[in-house]
Length: 323
Image (cartoon, rainbow, N blue to C red; front, top):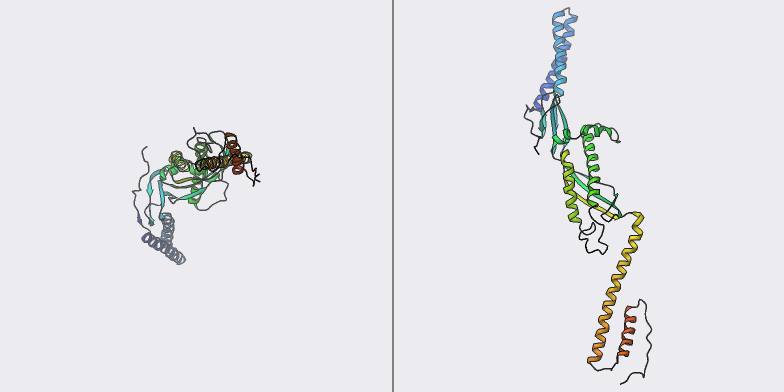
């Protein structure tokens, strides 16, 4: 896509020099006005009128000169327009003087962040979840930001209190635009993944376990959506993820059940290993000779002892083994 933004190539004068000339113009106008009234009082009408006319022209020139001063700070820019025609973007830091008839719009290229409130979305499996994100963004193209989206209307339509600084109005408008597009992008990305795999081996990527890949996809999606407004995403990261309140309790019980089952499996696996080791040791060292029934009884007793959650009370049965 062709880049429409370009640097301002018009005449730029030193602001401090022009400020000095402007103050001299004001002082000269005041002096001319004073002497003009003096000449009128002395019945020197022609001289007085000429001096007063010069004073009026000096005041008008002073007002025009005051409209030509601009100040640009680091990471700021001025969009220059001459009667509605885009004349370029001025980014040179300092105090300058330009054509007073050029209208300028001040913009900031500094990074800003948004900590978006969690929103409710449906994941790939249709489960309602709460998900929130953190964004770091900034302007990169002043032409798109001013002319490709209706930023001025958005600035006036906000519910915020009136702000006197125009750049603040515009940046708040861009921030609202980023928030709306961010919510849409977050819904789109979250809908492509399940919250977790729920023991389904066919699900390889989830919102819980693949945060880095999902964050990259979120950044890419946001960059595509915000490119039309001349905005770039520095960082996008999911900072909140949970089941929606209506299913959170059920999912918590499910997770607890899964944890209990996994623990039980580990206990049984260890118990079987220990029983096998005990039988082999008894057999190898010829400590006692057990038939199949005795082995089955011993395995049953050991499994009860090893897998029980509470302490067991052994029963000693003496005199029943064949030595």
